[in-house]
Length: 159
Length: 439
Ligand SMILES: Cc1cc2nc3c(=O)[nH]c(=O)nc-3n(C[C@H](O)[C@H](O)[C@H](O)COP(=O)(O)O)c2cc1C
Ligand code: FES
Image (tube, rainbow over all chains, first blue to last red; front, top):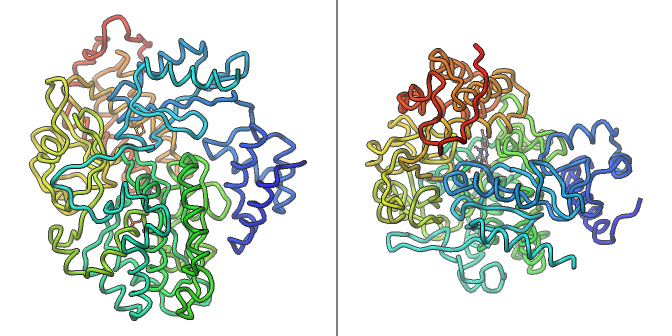
């Protein structure tokens, strides 16, 4: 299993941060997922063997963290915050709008694999609500119109 | 990128370098950066602890514990290495301030970590940043690397003969990981389930070593205290509540944003003057004073100084600085439901009262809000919540119960208005889901 040089460099560096190998697990899983798209059987086996853990240990950790997934997602994962500050400023409408526009619901993926969609809990953008994260990018103070523009921008990125 | 706001009543201490390019280490140095560490290197550890203790700085992560006092619990002698752990998991709904510190002034956090280390005799620290904040993790990685390059971290820092290492660490999405003991589990590469206390982290923490865990804003408040003194900081706030804090105004308010105001700033003034009041000519109904775990205040209860002790006396909590305004168009049953759905989703499942309690409350509130409520539910919601209180390893159970109890108590009539199959009075007609009633 091959990861990018940047991944390997970071992995090696992280191992020097802690007195135990296992401590690198959570950030390493996220970095691996960023490269592969999801935590495949192969990724899990590789990381388990590098850290002297069982695959079960690794799976146990994966299932705890909401950003980690063992199933492929769309190229752009649209995460709409549904928590209180966003709720008060139109998160429900935004969610409904996105679901209609993308034709998918919570944790769905469009047939072309371009978008997946998730309702998420507070992403730390409460004062700039309603807020959405697409992969790692924040989009804030959204309306249904500006949301459309955001989605169009991502669509354009692959053309 | 988060937008910055300002108001004349602000007292900028933690935010004084915001908007000034202080992520660059040279700019940070021009703006008094790393002066506090240099000063602390010439102080006795106890003198640092006392300074911080006397400043009245209290934890900005939510619990409001006196920071210097917390540091003083770390044993002087320890066979195992001691650690500083900066909590940058920021996930309490309504809270978005640590994000600004990481984005605008990451070196202030590093400086706070080093000073905490000098105070308790630790020689390494970790800065844990929630996984969603990837761009902030990258800013922090660069800041740490720059500090190493200047000799401010690593061996013989500032030529003092002391060594200090700071490491970054990224999470992967979990509210519970913000809880101090779960945070340590997560850093050790495990599921973020809480540890039983005692022993407290100050005695047995990361890998069994004594560990100081502080919120990012708490740590960023330390360098100014070292430079300008405990008395100065204490005098900015109210008795036992030193300094300023970042208040995150959100929800139904005209000028949402993160404002740095003195501790003890009047809440009513915060809402109507700093925040510009409630939009669309509507009236305020309730306020979440410090993140979603805090009991709500009604519009009649807001004329009070925002400090830890006053809020506690008022039956709520100052919490994490997330002040959420709720106007009179909002259904409080729906609001309670949304809060409960969050805690149900985030409960790590370790303790039964929290795992089962949040699930039952979510189910009951969902049915109730959809018009399937029965009268007995109202007391049941309260009963279930009260039975979670104090019965869990960590306070997540309390965090779910407290706002719920306050909403049922203070807005009981709204619950009654949902009874007998009546649709939610606040919802647009025709959008109400009718679920079957079961009891
Ligand atoms: C469920 C739960 C979540 C928490 N989340 C955070 C958080 O995201 N950030 C934080 O600093 N403290 C959080 N805390 C509080 C921490 O347990 C701890 O009190 C704090 O980090 C200590 O630092 P302080 O004394 O500087 O506030 C949380 C507590 C609980 C019970
Ligand atoms: S509530 Fe949506 S970002 Fe905090």
